[in-house]
Image 1 (cartoon, protein in one colour):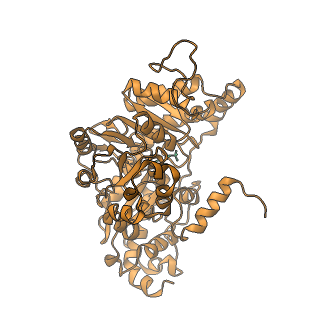
Image 2 (cartoon, helix red, strand yellow; image 1 turned 180 degrees about the vertical axis):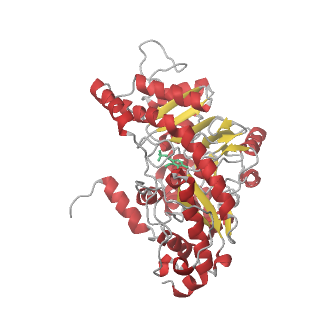
Image 3 (cartoon, helix red, strand yellow; image 1 turned 30 degrees about the vertical axis):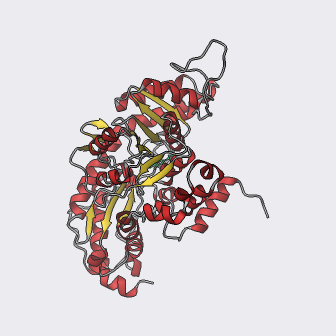
Length: 473
Ligand SMILES: Cc1ncc(COP(=O)(O)O)c(C=O)c1O
């Protein structure tokens, strides 16, 4: 058999393990980032009533509402960006140097944070932050189940134990009311995740953390420039972590960052990301060499340059996504059985890394979530079912059975059935399995008149749901 590269092999494994409709987020973004030449379809009246031939659902053979493509992602302006990139390559300084420093300074400035450290990806940013707050074997970290797998894998990679606190189904975020009951003598940290670019309830979370003397690390990997009370997501706690993977609102391809106002912590992170070599307050005797346990997770100059070029657009694009999402929320909430995301009152900017809404089967003649999504896709609207419950996947059984975990925890804590029982998150199960539907963020960058197609398509499915239910295979 031909040898498969590890990445191809993993991708293949993922496809084999998942039911077809549970497309991975990245594959979904790739498949649905359609290319937008001529994407401005004129819609003179915003009348979403469908009639005659067009009301025949596309999934049953009718005309799709939308036949043209959506804006492409990531965006790249050849004219203004090509030469700048070539200059970096021709300069032949490719490892971390001045451009990375500039990227860090600018990102810290944009967020209003004292310091920023760029690293290879968001997962490593989370691991470095946990480790530099001395979180590891024997500790517990509270995390929501509604997140990307990286949040939980980061905790496991430090040797700490993830403890799942259920979500609020209206906001999809960790529910502060469910956090306190999960705190034990082992709890060291909370990792709220601003999932889908919608901010978590940070004021409530920080209050709990303060009361119990816990570290808070924000997973802001999907929340570039999101705001709570005009402060940026990632700057409301001890440290914030970002991802610049291609699908993200600030795309580099791969990349990540840690931000914090804690200078000593940031010095330790820097040292750790460069093999533990001296940096800032991490000092030893002259000539003593490497000082702390570290690794190498440095970003390159050409990645930082892409980041700097993309950073110029991030605010404008975020504003546009927020405006368009607000418009969609108002329109879609008119359709019986569609419930847009609720934002916490203190949210001053939500950046919609994905545009989500909840779908209620009862209002759609009993169509289930998969059938609804297939119907919407057939109408030319990119959409996907999103995450499956993370607190129920096999990686947890594996982690609890590893040699390190067996050495670090009492047997009782490693009993998988007991762990599963203690980490039930019924609200998250309903959200994932029955309700939430995602539309990718590049769609929100289309002209507003194009977004009318989404509303028309949802109305159309609403009107034809009984026919779809009776005939869908
Ligand atoms: C919520 C969340 N956390 C962590 C990560 C990890 O980031 P990365 O893919 O850059 O490692 C991602 C993105 O993939 C994410 O969406």
